[in-house]
Length: 71
Image (cartoon, rainbow, N blue to C red; front, side, top):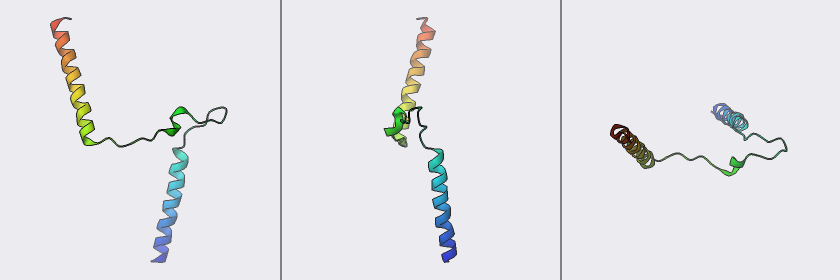
């Protein structure tokens, strides 16, 4: 049981190091990080996604209507 737990912890630590090294922000020529170093990416909620989808559909509909009217 202890061997399995130890192996699981070791795999988690190694995986975290591998992922952390791969997603690090690239360094600039003078050693400073890019502008987006302070931003974090968050997952979009379903309501926000639906709002964006509706807005895009409305824009497409308006564009199609304008093209049909010959404006």
